Length: 200
Image 1 (cartoon, one colour):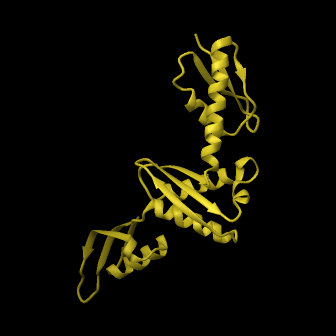
Image 2: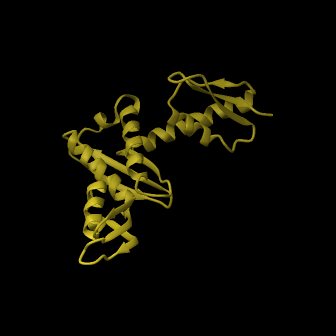
Image 3: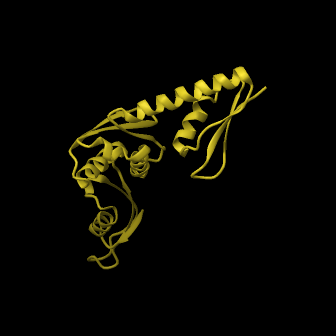
């Protein structure tokens, strides 16, 4: 963001108020500066960038969320080049997972927004609860491959039960390289479903 003021202190104060962070997290690049005579006519214009570790901000967000929910827990981080997994373990994991994993999915969406506002290159964010999502993903992918195998053998298309966008995406990805299988999402939310079709 571009800031203007009479002196550099004006820029720093305005930037701190705007970004809600101390000067140590700000990078200031002066674009234009006039000294003035005895301070009269002084002017400075600068570009200020907020520099924070997106992964650390994601972890802080999740720890604050646990605190707000009056839960005790830990957050472990496993990061790769274009992705990061936050694994939570708390004294009430069921509450965080929610019915059919919907609360956990909402937390993951919010955490992804927090993380990616601090980076130019998009990071894929996964929030797991003591391995719950990993096990869930494996079950969905196993189920998809099982149905796809049946469709390949019988050449009869299969209609799956309605599922959320995250699970549909898992199935599309799991079967994307199957030679004679095509996956198509049909219907409207919340009843949107996948057709696993035989492709000649």
